Length: 133
Length: 401
Image (cartoon, rainbow over all chains, first blue to last red; front, side, top):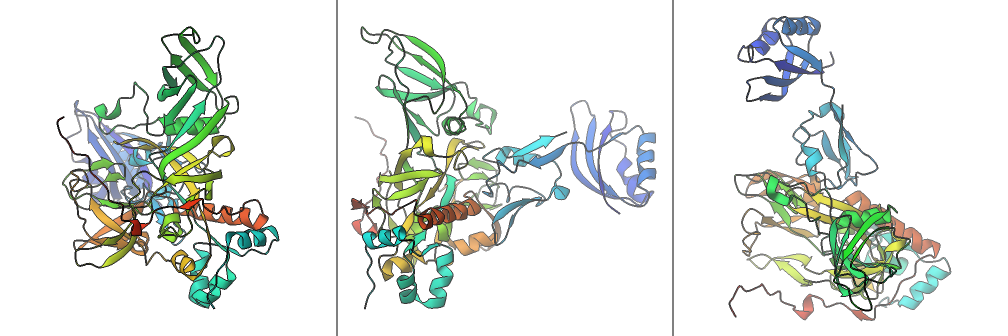
């Protein structure tokens, strides 16, 4: 089953509850935490990659617990006209979404592997990486 | 009998459409297959290419005179200062110059989104560029302030003049410290997290004529998508042969070129404004140099492979920044291009900063120009100094009067 990326927002009241644990235990979902952050107001944001048969049930559970769930709408894209295939991003990208294709040495971008950490937007010397929402 | 060809003979072959031209990549397999002598006999020109960030680049601009006239004392192009202490309406815009209001590294690491290199690219894209100037006014140049827009086609001259480009070879940068550092070699992760190199290796011009047997003052080249010339040796031209402490040699390094050409006939795809996180702005420059195959020795050098050419691995967290000699060993370009090298027993992922696909495209474009008879080889007025000349680098001593 194809995985889906979702953004979960936890209010201060529930940010200390072990909610994601139940996704695995009760709904048998495979999760991969792509990003997690708690702000000074104790509100949490977690970006998850989820897959499993009981995906919809798992999401319904999250909502019942007061978690706001949104699909990951942000997308990192590559401006093909600007990219020079220099390669400066390829050893920085944490997931290997940006990689050097060998032997051509062209830089490839596999957006399925991208976790929208956006580090490539900063390290790209010609600003070829863009974010769209 | 040893093969010897002259520039005139090669140009005559280009004129008659009989020249055999190969890229520096293509020639490798030919030499492996046919041997050095036969390949030297067959091939007339080997084309090279490189496309990487090259500081020490910039453009001389001559704006034309306003009415009334002005002796410009300070000028800005899209907010980026240019040096006008040359003449009334002449200025030099350097690739690494930053706008006066750039926050630089005050919000570390700074982004350096715009600088002199980006202005050069905007000019090439035929975008209007804001010109501001101030002065003190003279009897013959009374105007004191000016604000207008210029385009590349409207100003009288725009001469790209890069005092140091096309480094023969370059360091492979790593970080031995515990913290991420931001350098002109890119973001370097702590504890040997990555290794960044910046050379086209077997396609790179000065690695394919390491002893300066053909490249010299007046050599016609591919520069920024148009035609340019080698003006002189570059600054910091210290050609040498790399050695480790045991006396093993690792090929050439240290040569540089000063190049010049009319910006108006260059292309924005080949002169690209560049931002290095936490470091600054610069210009990525495309350069291609034809190597006339005058004899077997020239061919032997031009056929060097990524396996024959080495970069020194240097720690940018300390050794480089503190200007301490020494390195962490040498890595071949074959190893660097494989994606992993071993440094101090640790496997380190590698990444280039110089685009190999673009270098390949430059070498192919230059080959195409020559085959079409649009580009002839020029015999240098004087060859550049080589490692045999023993030029020694001096460091800057900090001293009182």
